[in-house]
Amino acid sequence: MTTRKKLEGNGLWESSRMMLPEHKETIIRRQLEEGRKERPTLDPQEMELIESALAESFHEHTAIKVRLFDEYEDKELTGIVVLIHTVRREIKLSMADREWHWIKIDEIISVR
Amino acid sequence: MKSNNRVVMLADCQSFYASVEKADHPEYKNRPLVVAGDPERRSGIVLAACPLAKEKGITTAERLGEALAKCPDLVVIKPRMQKYIDVSMQITEIYKSYTDLVEPYSIDEQFLDVTGSLHLYGTPVELAQIIQRHVMEATGVRARFGIAETKILAKTACDNFAKKNPSGLYILSKDTLADTLWKLPVSSMFMAGSKMTRHFNVMGLPTIGSVAQTPLSKLKQMMRRKFGKNSDISAEMYWRIANGIDDSPVRPGTHQVDPKSVGHMMTLPRDYAKLEEIKVVLLELTELVCQRCRGLGFMGHVVSVGCMGADFDRPTGFSRQMKMDDPSNITNQVYRWACRLLESYWDGLPIRRVGISLSQFSPDTEYQMSLFDTGRERSMALERVTDALKNKYGNSIVIRAVSKTDAGQALDRSAKIGGHYK
Image (cartoon, rainbow over all chains, first blue to last red; front, side, top):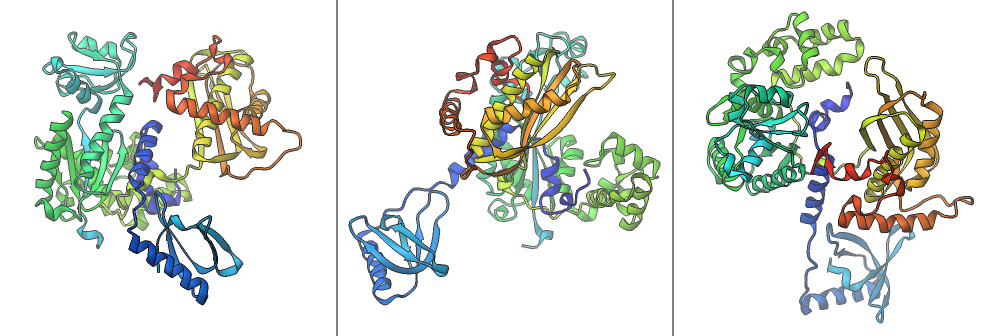
């Protein structure tokens, strides 16, 4: 019973509580549901801004930061657009350390 | 925000299970009522007693037979665990309409940090009264509030003072500890069980104040003499509790941490003496453990099996663990290793309690291919389907054939929460 953790953070309470596993699962499920959000609808002007920012990065080789939608937590990636696939509506974003990602343009909710 | 201006509440629900039943059965409003495990058996235990029943001298955890002797017209109700979880969640939602910082501590106790939203409602007592009325109107349950600047003081305020106050509210401020908390016997201190209370008394520390006012270094010395040098952390813990020192945050996401191990254990309805019978329950428990791991997206590398003998006077049994060749969450794979443990360490005497757990987790997105276990993909596909069915319709929708034998417990267990019927 004598572990250092009891004196740190929330340790005293996390080590002493009595929770039914079923209760705990309900709490976690509820929290995940609450954190879940709807995909925002972008207006056509914003779409244009995003597309022109992507095109600019592609032509000028400038780094941009794209924000990708996620139900729970949006993701931000920084890199240079090296390919634009217009039919599949995807871009290839090249990042540091020779890493790259294919990104669906429809996943992007903002560009900086 | 600095910790000395926090406002933390511990809200506790009075006779929770009994209050929920009374709200649900208005016809018993003015009658003494208890919720008891298994009312058919007089040896069942009182899980909760309403205030009217407590007036008759009935206490929680006493035998139903004794309670009935004290009060023959007692209303006895079977526990409905799922209902209590639902009402507890409803109360959490009510608290969350006053602050986003709500941390459930048990089914009937929750911490609230109202520091940020207090100014919208007035004083801490006014806010507590508003929440108290809200919970009462929505659920019929009476909530009591311990209010303080730390979690430990809020809990202490609730347990020792708010519960005894007619209003059900109590503010414990740090500068009045000497006249309030410190006067109480050490047995009233949070985390001090009967053993520890005895030790404190022997050390010449009969009140919470005497623990608080012993310098920490001296308390450590005193406890080292009794419990050896590993007791420093305990000493500091008790010293902080007695002094109300606690910087723990109210953490709503506290339950979302990844577990270190996943296990299930059950007490059997009778003694099991045959290997085949024990194996049936072991398989059923393995299934539950693996099912939960699959739901969490984990594979375990170490499997532990424990058995406890049936004879309480001459304790037998074992608890052993083993590292599997590869991490897994596939029932049949884990079960094979669990059986090896059981067959090697079981002494052949009848047993009353079986448990199994998996630990040392890794994510189940990648796994080691095996030349010899070609059925893995098939097993995984099968378990994905059975898990989906169970999530939708309950665990009893698909069971193994052995669960239909006399030794099987899966059906009974799937109807229960915490050992009591849903």
